[in-house]
Length: 114
Image (cartoon, rainbow, N blue to C red; front, side, top):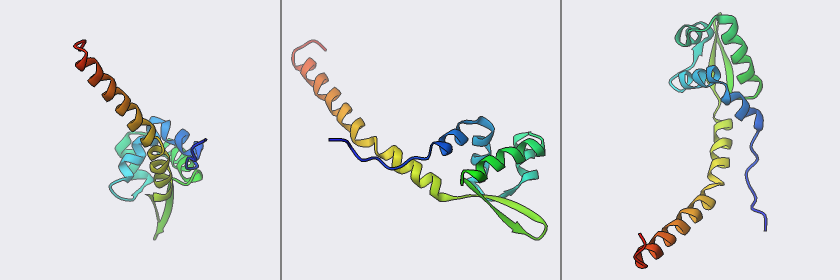
């Protein structure tokens, strides 16, 4: 019987796989930042940073907050909740494998082979 798994958007994984975008995500964990603040901290030009933020925005990972004449980028929780749900769907499989390994090690120990 197939196990039902949560729907995982591959574009989220692709966006997070790029090292500069992942660095941006790590920065935004703390607080919303402007393009200038982000580019300064990850040592990328503003145009390159803006391109990465566009990708993150297009796939719904970040949202833009306008305050006066500045645009702040902030993480959206939904993509990370979906990612967490998808990862948790593997938990049962991994627990079963660890239980099998534990049983095997106990059998080998009882037989004096380990």
